[in-house]
Image 1 (cartoon, rainbow over the protein chains, first blue to last red):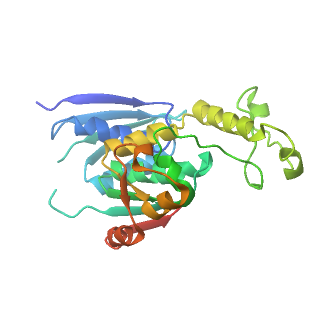
Image 2: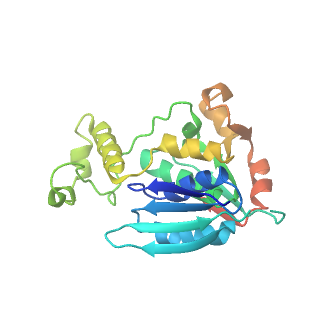
Length: 77
Length: 170
């Protein structure tokens, strides 16, 4: 059964959201899903690039308004 | 993954608080993307390997640096304070004040400290390489540095950089 974990990167600026995301994913199993929350507008392009580079699946990248961004990432390897 | 990892090779040559950021930000971001990363610390970048980092910022001779106040109303915080060199050079403790203000502003905005970024780099196996020649010239010893630091020369670093997709000099 795949687990869903959450990670709150609110208030953090570049590069901490990607650094924290990597660390959180490292401790998870393949197939698990991470929900990451960020308030840094730069995390939108950064998370897309990060997913492309790492090969993990960015299931959803959502701009929820008021500088709140929600990312759903699946660990693929 | 079986495929070869991308590699980033950085040269860090500056030791002020502002210029300490780019190499550690780029190194940690690249490592977070599963790249191999090596940073070669040379000349004034070398003290960034010290156990205790004591980086300061100087607005003197740095006209592009915004001088802002990290407190007060938003309007007040957005003011760029014009600080002529002639004035800065004559105020004792000006660099200490500017350093304090920059650290406070970074903290308020959510920027990680240099120490936190370096720790993240170590945690992600970024290779932090001190320049042997600079150590000899300025009198550093390996014991001054964090235990994760390696020591090498230009040829060894270039051999590493030759295999890197991305090379940068900061």
